[in-house]
Length: 552
Image (tube, rainbow, N blue to C red):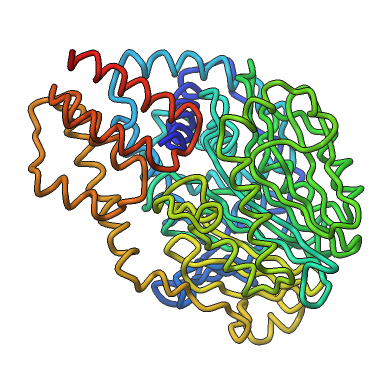
């Protein structure tokens, strides 16, 4: 659905960079000492260079540990993850024609993105540019015709932001929350988040848990994907955590600082909430974003709300909990019409209310209960709203989920599929110490949270089959020559019977085949379900009205 626009935006952002001759910027890196990595391959899933290494754990998470100056960090990262990074590139570029097959539309997007990206490098720290420059040496030669390696690496870091800018919609429906004092079993701060950034199952396979010891600043960990130095979910050794949630954005005229590099800077240089706010305030962003910041030193959490022309901080008093979905809550945005409309029309407010409901049911959270909250697939009051519905906390498309215990310096990272697999525990006190160097292990496996039993259920198997068959429905909608058997359609409906989209898509199929009586039935079924957004409901209603007119 809408999230795939993220991918399209990235692709054409990169294509535009290749044809734009006005930017030939290369960062200054001569001030950094560099040792070209000579990677030692220990086995098919473990690689090392000096104290840097990459390994895959039994939960299939890749774990990367790197240290050094900015340029060295980039080289170490690229040398160790080269195969993974190049595979991620291939996943991006191999799909572009499928998403935007029209050459005319591709050209429009190219020219738009030429203008759009012209100033991004002016808004990225020089040390991060140096790191990206080092990393880019290990990118694939295969895509040099699209853009030089360094520019590809730079603009890929605007992935989250470009998804906003490419279309005036909220393309990433993430959910996060922080609880402390009376809302946790031990009174400590506890933070959970789902990162619902979806560009296909292949993209999410190689999750990367990074542990970084920069020459300057605070050691930190983050969860993302190969080739990424920005942070979407992370915690530093001081117990500062950051997670990002998309807000409603208007299309800006130029790219500025990617939000993942703002949050990276917070992790690398902030020890408390006030320092995090100072960093966020001084950076010029180009989309609207909520940054949930937790702090062990403050034993508190706030939401920093940034946009191109506004800035706010949402704090709570005495409640001991903060919820963050995809709308703004601070006084700075009280009169923001775009935000107000988003609250009414999107699924953000629904998920916010669901969090309130879940916290009423689970009054004192611990890491295991937090995992249950993040995995919840039901609607308000336990209603069945269909698997994959974006009104659910667990939309069954998350790239990852993370749980932070900042005061204990513990973090749990979900493994595939989605946030349903085992949560692997990491102790930053041990990882960034001599103890790690002696035993070489990163995870603290005795604290892992077990996988969700839903993974072994018939409903889960049906959902995965539903996803596969949905592509056939889409193909049949677009191709009037392709027909689906009644047996296929009946089976498809049984796979995810509570999801409105099942019936909407079948309604469109019948409508295009001019079988209006059956189309009417399917559209009416869709309207009886919990539809994700107001625009989605309006689309169904519009199709139903067209169908009724055709039947007269």
